[in-house]
Image (cartoon, rainbow, N blue to C red; front, side, top):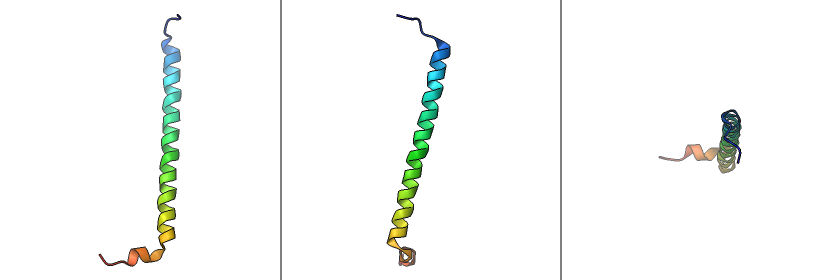
Length: 51
C-alpha cells in the first residue's frame, strides 16, 4: 500500500470541487429554463389574475 500523497489529494479535491460547481451551475440553469418555459407556456394572462 502506498503512503498518502497530500499534493495528489489536494489536486483531486480541487478537481472534485470544480466538477461540483459545474454540476450545480448546470442544474441551476435547467431549473431556470424550466421555470421560464412554464411561465411562457401559461401565457401573459398569468400576471393579470386577481389576488
